[in-house]
Image 1: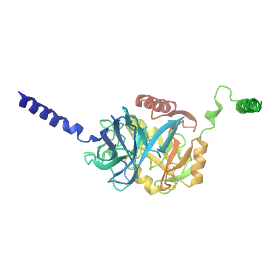
Image 2 (image 1 turned 180 degrees about the vertical axis):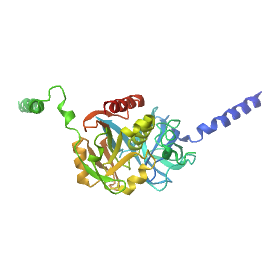
Image 3 (image 1 turned 90 degrees about the vertical axis):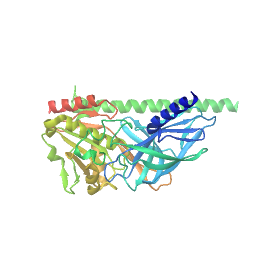
Image 4 (image 1 turned 60 degrees about the vertical axis):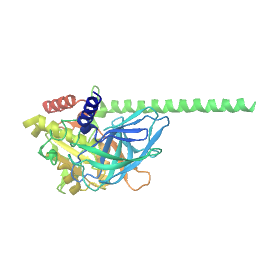
Length: 170
Length: 210
């Protein structure tokens, strides 16, 4: 009986692995489903998105990191202010309060891959690290969504555009 | 008592500041009203008539592009830059999808993307970047002065935002897509925050109106 349950649990774990493969944990910091998206040719920047949860008792801050495709990485906030798109680097990092989750998503907080050396392409996860003030550094692998995707599972993005938009996605 | 006297002065100064602000706001409103009267534009909001002006910029082929080429057709115009991780590629993709949805009617509309970062967005670079989107989207760049001039005429704003160590920069900019009729008058704007159906309906209305 015990072994059946263990096998079942293992089976579930294996089945669940594909969706969770990119999740990362570092002490009391959990990073769920990091993703980025394909960029137009010649693009020098791309955004990285994820959900960061702090299960600890102290606040921590996402202060930076690296990505193999980028010259450097910054933590940014995008906001809309009366029709104006505002982008700013969070020079003090992004605070993750104890017991809270912060969602990095299009139109909001994101990590920005700057000075791209190569373009993110579907099927080739982007590798890098994220650095937290207290927890330290953790390896991250971002799944790559199509150009213009609003979320990782946005099926309407990229491929629904002109012929030019789905290069490299299939 | 000195402290009370000091507080009284502070309070007086604060109220004076409020009064001056109110007067200034009133004067601005009055000025706007008078201008509207001078124009004699009862009914039509005066601001609408003053958005956009003839321009000349550089196309992705490196050739000069004059707005006279747009005459007789409605157009959609928006401002952005290629070092933009989110809203610019998203808007370009949305406009690509709108053009596709229009089918044959797409030929009745011009779509223009104007770079507000001409320092980095050369004609060649813009051409490469736009190759991911509908080829009918017209990419435009220009000198700093030309860009400042067209942005001003559309009341679009943009500003350079350096990163913390000053090694790189990004841009803040007006994100709306301006929908202009065939006479070059502002009809409506599109926002990336509204549903796709709403945007498509606005474009349909623009084409119906002409």
